[in-house]
Image (cartoon, rainbow, N blue to C red):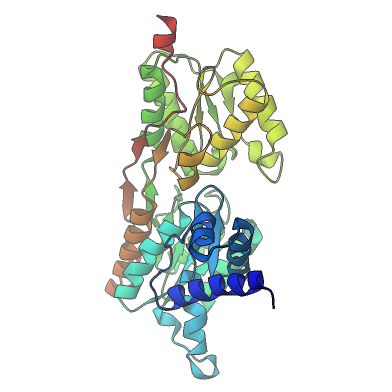
Amino acid sequence: MSENRLLYEKIISYLRQEINSQNFKPGDKLPTEKELAQKFGVSRITSKRALEDLKSEGLIYRVRGSGSFVSGLEKNLDKFLSNNVNNRLDYSRVVPIVLPFDVSNGGIMNLVIGASRVMDEKGYILSIHCGNTDNNEEKKLLLSLYDKNVAGIIHYPISDRKNLEVMNYLYLNNYPIVTIDKYYESIPISYVVSDNLRGSYEAVQYLISKGHTRIAFVSDGKIEDATSIRNRYFGYCKALNENKIEIDEQIVKSGLYDMEINHDNEIYKKVVKELFDQGVTGICAINDYVASTLMKAATATGISVPQDLSIIGFDNLEFGKYLSVPLTTVQQNFYKIGKVAAQMLLEGIEGGEHKCFKNIVPTKLVERDSCSNILVRQM
């Protein structure tokens, strides 16, 4: 066996031991490829391979630009199942969290950690169901969980305009459910969301304070598909209106995600060029992923950020700090959203009453380098 192979296995063995002994807990960041390479005296290729193998096992997850993190929260239900003879378990102590994204997606892990800690304290098992963006599959999953008599559900809807009949069915059956990120305007179900309107309003006010009056709004999703998108759009409009800046629908771009499966750079290059040619100097992006794609598209078309074009995101995902131009953004408190959602759900489960509670979590503007002051440039 080669020396490189031995060292590679030592890295894996070391990390497994640290995770199993809980020196690294779910959600904790692991040493970087460079740090592991230095610690074990190997190349970064060797340390990277070790991390990739642990990722394949599901022991860790990796976020581009942010690093490697311990997974494991999603294993809770599997462990619980394996400890119950003949799979006869009491589902009344299980609370699923249904997510449209993988837990490695940005701040979602913090949301899961917040919910998980509340559940653990109260003796409940948090099971995680994620990565499904199909409305029909979402419907099947919700009904399946209901039929299993799980204690209640924390639900991150794909859209608040889809599966209304399922949500209404759960509501009419007095079933404990709390939604996060979005809420159903026509069904009185409890929810926990960020203050999307206020966050977007403050983002646009920030751009206006730097002299921008030609400000675009860009969203991958359609405005009509989600309360989170609508409220961010309404915050955008509110800030413009209060500053007597005309709302120009020609520089409002939404539904870009429907054009391609992913954030397609060619589409965003076209959008950036169109906006820039229309005199736009600032863009309020629906989230950090869209903001970073716009930034790359601008660079590819010869538009400099922030000298020619200012871009502000929403979420404050970890990778935003490490972009070529660190991203100014609006921070969501994902941990608190998960924690409060779990508390609200457990209150309904244990109290037997499922009233409609509305909890709006404040956001915070995080200033970095992606927005310039054009008032200074004009002096």
